[in-house]
Picture (spheres, one colour):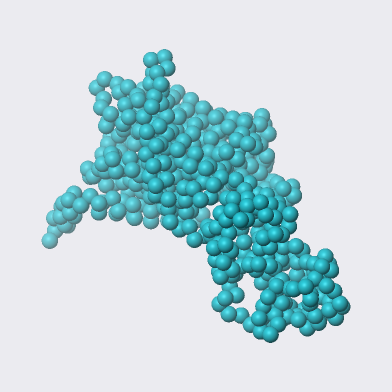
Length: 556
């Protein structure tokens, strides 16, 4: 059988089973995107885009409705994830981060509009140039959605399908150069302007330790009492001198462990202690010696979040509930309506408080049954909220206003983002509402984005060679300008005018361009996660602004 005949048979098979094409594009693209050359990889989005271009060149397409499902899952999940952080940023440095996100969006928008006008690019190519140059998938999605929704006028002689194809081709040609350019700029700009991101991150972290305590190293250890004076102390005295008010201390007598009672401790007692490392060195080392415990599977420690739902607990203090004595659990933190509140014996517990504890699986389950629910057991997705949240977002996007004869609307992208933001924020306030576990959220966002990008690649593949011949070089140059200009202007405005701290500024710029790939480079260069704080500050604003930019750029 000849090679040509084999190729014809393969094409025939794929033409009759498009679902096979889709998963090949997804799988091969994901694999290619994760191939590393040194420390660099193009990423799954670019990989799927390029494989989609290849298959699109041979006439394969994905249905608009299929692509829309991926688009809806992606945008809603982005909003859901950003919801809590969006509100937190609004309450903290809202104006500073909003201004930086706005500056980046406006400078990118302006560059794309200028190049589109001066080069007389075909309709829709400006949106591809903007979204590709900024490596912003939400911008691309919003632009294509604006065409499908009919909220932008189509020039005479063009169809909406041709305009959507132009958007896809412009994005495909500029995305890879935008991604590489962004990463190179973020990597080398700090050195050029004389910022040592490692030292700045270390200094920022040192100054922040008073406000943001680092996670505690909680350990389970066994000790034998070696101080004979302990036998003369009652429980009250023991607590005052040798307890930190948080650690779990149990004594073993007659082969059983139980909380220390009113009789206190005696010389030779074996105690089991669950607490932070410093408690052992500062307190227990003065009265006891560590011994090798008898371990079994029941000793394995785990952490979980317990949501208070029992009305009998509402209003009681931590001392009255006595989590450490009653359940043998160490309390790591308490969150109320998304905020961390101090944990002391006098702290009053409220309904919907989220208590993070460490202990054995049995202890966690026992407290969960008494107090309300164990969050780590929440592996099921609230399908009602997810489905209706997406539906409501789509409905919101249908409404439009007439301003100066122009129809203005959020579009599906803006509506889905708004719905996701609200539900994500509401979830942070009320943990029993709208459950969407992190692994599920990651899958929906990743699968939705790649489904959408596969459609973009397949659509663009049909005319990519012609576009390369006609506008390829100038589009690449224009895309580089759209990438570089917002970074330079964003740095100047953020660092010089807004006084964003050096440890945060480059993370904030990548957030303003919604580029997770570039953020990973910043974190690696800083050898610290501190830049992610700046990323969070601008990311939520940027999602809203770049979605709007995707619709408005269609004017040019």
